[in-house]
Every structure is written in structure tokens, then in C-alpha cells.
Length: 403
Image: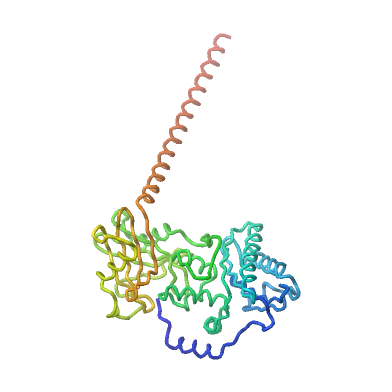
């Protein structure tokens, strides 16, 4: 990943100093709807629309010749979502909507978020689309306004990105800005980010993506490997240059391989080797040692280090942030962690039990057994039909002979 450049940081500071609120002083509440079209509705005390802000060209396409000023907010929202569906911006392939609300009345803001999320969900369900709605409070934060202007994105999207960055500083702001709302939603799910003040319902559509299994097969084919020689592999959804990719790592007895597979096209996006490192930074001197890191992990997760097996640790750098990738087995559970090497922040944590693996194996075995049973039943049915035909033929021949 690329670091946020000094030039961009300087520009962000300058824009922050110049930025001012884009909302109307008379607006009692504000609703922002982002897909790729980005539209803001400003409401009066009676929740009627008093102003419509179009943040990009796609938004102008959505609104068209509709006059929403003076219209009830629910009617306006239905009209906007309907137009987004009709124009193909929301579909089964791109089913995610970012809904952001601000209100002078805190309780009214909570009620609006819940009601409007349900309104969108109901409309999409009626259009045979299983939608996913991300909801957040719109704070009109100075940093978000500055970032929105700098990267030409909506303020609502900027606030969501800043929440992600606060939780995981390894991500690159410019790359997140290039992602669609659906891709951002996919990233939230893949990384299991739990953001303060951000909620979501539904699941981001993966219908436009190849599967993790297909990405794995593409990597195996690219490196011309015999699957039988692969002793370990890992496939994770990531972002690279503002594109959703699968990071595929393969390991044989003799060598390790890493490649990014374009998640939509299924093609090799970039091949990594030991010399490929977006960060030229040296691992910081004040980073915790591996021993100190494992002590921290043991304390945090209540783990007895003497019972840890199959421990693997790797020092990594992303966007100038040093962290450890840690994997180990403990009491029948497999732990996968990503922990900041300096301050000990847990960026990622996944724990799987042997029961999960056993369930998968049992399911596979059940499938095989079911197939065998079906084959046996089909063979038995075929044999029965053959015997019946033979009996009927014999009876016919006997009848003919008697005649």
C-alpha cells in the first residue's frame, strides 16, 4: 500500500482552513444518500424538503426534472431510491446504500435513521433486491469536509472513511475514496470492522466478484503449481490502488508465493515477491519484540503460552504502520491476529474451533454419502425398471404363443 503523501497532507491542512459547512443554517435535519450518486436533502422542522444538494453528475441523473422542495422526506426518499434502481445504480450486483442523518434533535436523528433505513430496505425488497444499508450520524466534521473537497467525494463518504482510518491506520485514504459504497461495504465485512456510530443491515453483494476458490485456482494456474504440492494457502479480500482484489498466498515445502487477483475480472492484478514492498520504512526500533508481543497477546486473550502450538509470527508494514501477523493453535482453536507492533492495538482477530473444521468435513462426507445413496437408488430403480420390462416382454411372448 502507498503512504499518504506529505503533499496531500499539506493540501488537506490548507483545505481544512478554508472549508466551511455545506449545510443550510435553517435546516433542522439533513439526510445524505450515497451509492455512487450522492444526494443531500435538507429538511425543515416539519420534515419537508427545503433544499436538494447534488454532489456529483450521477446525482443530477437521478433527480432529473423532479422537484422535491416542499415534499415530505419519505416521499422524496422513495423517489430517489426508485430512480437509483431504475437507472441501475442499485441492483443485485451493487446493493449497498450509505445513509447518513443529522438533526438538531438527537432523538429525532435516531428515529430518522431507523425509519429511513427501513424505508430503503422495504423499497429494495419490493424490487427483488436484497439490500444492505450502512447508517451513520452526519457530524459535519471539519476534517471530513476538507477530505471531501480534497478527494472530490461526498462528506458522508469522507466521514465513513475517517472512521475506518481511525480504527485501522494501515489503510490508505486515497484508495478508500476510489471504492464504491458496495466495495466499502465488502471491506467492512471482510475486515470485520466495528466502527463507532456506524451500523448496517444486510450483506454487501458479492455477485459481481469471483469466489475465493476461483481466486485460489487462478493463483495456482498463474504459478503453474501442482495442487498436491501446496501445504498451506490463504485467500483474503483486500484493496489495492482503489480496486477490490483477492490476496492469495500459497506455500509449498520449498517456496512461498503471493499474488493479487482482480476480484471482478479474475485476472492477475500484481504478483508480489520478496522485493515488492510498498513501504521502504524500516521496522521501528520501539516495536515490541516477538516475545513481548506474545506476552501482550496472552494477557489480552487469556492464553497460557506454554500450551500454544504451531506459532507463526511475521513482521509487516502497511502505510507506515508496523504490525505483527500472528497465527497459533490453542486448546483446539486456531487464532489469526494482526496487532500493532508499537502500541499493541488489535487490528484483526479471528478464532476458529476444530468443531468448525469438523462440521465442514462432516458436511463434505455427508455430500459424498448422499451422492452414493442417490447413485445406488438410481441404479436400483434402473434395475427394477429393466426387470419389469423383461417380465412384461416375457408375458407378451407367452400370450402370443398361446394364441
